Length: 222
Image 1 (cartoon, one colour):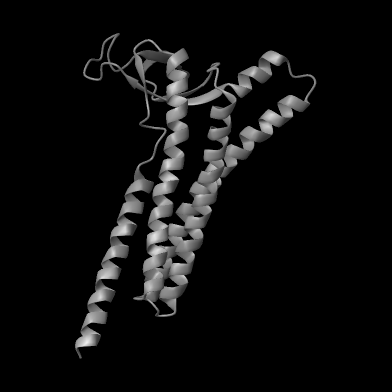
Image 2 (cartoon, rainbow, N blue to C red; image 1 turned 45 degrees about the vertical axis):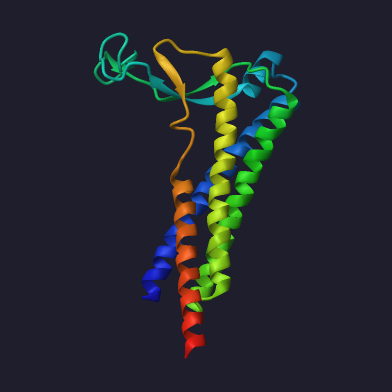
């Protein structure tokens, strides 16, 4: 039983670690590119501005039910294998637009991204401590209930720290940028899986708490 549990826990840790690594990697790459562009004297001011204004956006066709010029397939790309243009519909892209964000908004965006990484790491630590406790056959106790509650709260906060930067980008880009036949959307920029996991963890924590209270009441009646 413990072996299967450990295997599943290792998989969960690997998935969470990948999420942290991916977020941290793109965060560091963005910071590094910005610093290098600022230090490099050969980089033009226009190129630096393009890099600083780079944004990731999610798109959704305005008319999903149609297939014509104003329907699902808004664009086309050249297929090098067939030598023909094939219809496509974009769901995300990188753009460089000047959103005229204030210094406060830029600072909040950076802080939220950094906080997201920190909370994800904290979630992994909490999960590992929970697994260690379970492997010691010390499962149903108030410490684990507390760990589960913290883990659930951390996952929910992690979702919020990912949602807020995405919303800030969505709002700022939407004020200065639009694509014919598409609408800006938050669907691909926000992953609700973390929110579901956080709520599920809180539910498990409350189940543990109810079980412990019932056990304590039974011990008192004996």
